[in-house]
Length: 68
Image 1 (cartoon, helix red, strand yellow):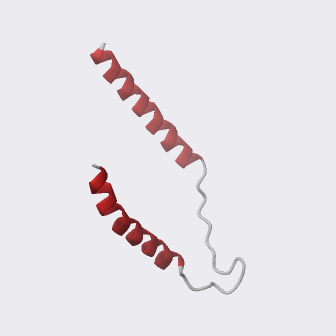
Image 2 (cartoon, one colour; image 1 turned 180 degrees about the vertical axis):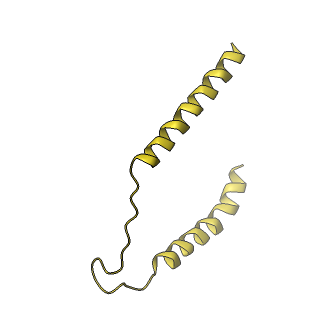
């Protein structure tokens, strides 16, 4: 396992870092707030997160109940 990580981790990290640099090298938009369009992310995202947490807790509780 250690050999696998030492052999494959450096190329993967290099690829990810190169992708991050390319993705963040966007041209400027002409000002501090230029053509920036803000998307309202408010209650919907928090409801989805809460629902996902509740679903995961329910599944975990059911899984633990089967083992006991």
